[in-house]
Image (cartoon, rainbow over the protein chains, first blue to last red):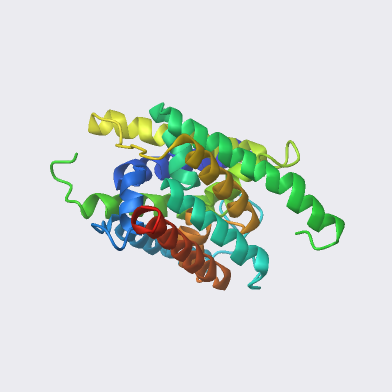
Length: 148
Length: 143
């Protein structure tokens, strides 16, 4: 792994974390305020997503004109278009967890620097959940030949 | 920083920075800025592309620190959720994002931007599931 690639990853992470902080999305109350359509609705998350998707789409438009990334041999973007049970079931489980706590992986990990024990607990449980998937489902699917 | 940032400008500007992060990782390294994928990849076989993932996550932690230096205060965050509920939520988020191959960043920010069919479906489902969950918790019969 070349130093420029590591620096690019670091810079991307910094931009992401600073953007999350500025956007207000590190506060689970604001996220839940967006998801609570029946309460005092907080539209902030829609503006965050709109800003992020718009700029990110410019990136993907530029990508279409490039043979390869600046620092890497090839683009690693999934080509899969199948809507399968794993995708839909996984999204549903994630959505339930997101709605229970108001935290998704980005704000939760970035939020570790805030030193709140609740966020640390959530992140620990999240890593256990990821590990559980790796040790159970992924292994099982690989065994029956349906793995990625 | 708050004084001149309207309630809509800060989310929009913060979102644009997140979009810049995604575009940078894509155009420089050819990678999708999906947090669950980047973090989850570290739990896989050791040494598999782990250096850049660690670098990205270190940056993700540095971002709010830089915000603190620029704005003079930490970003706000408070959780009014019980500890058992947080643990269940964390497990569901961790397991679900790996099973569904992405979260709000990978499917949301990146997937919608590249018009991925799978991401549109995933975003619709996790948004709907989260909205129903919040409704049941806040306004459901349990209350």
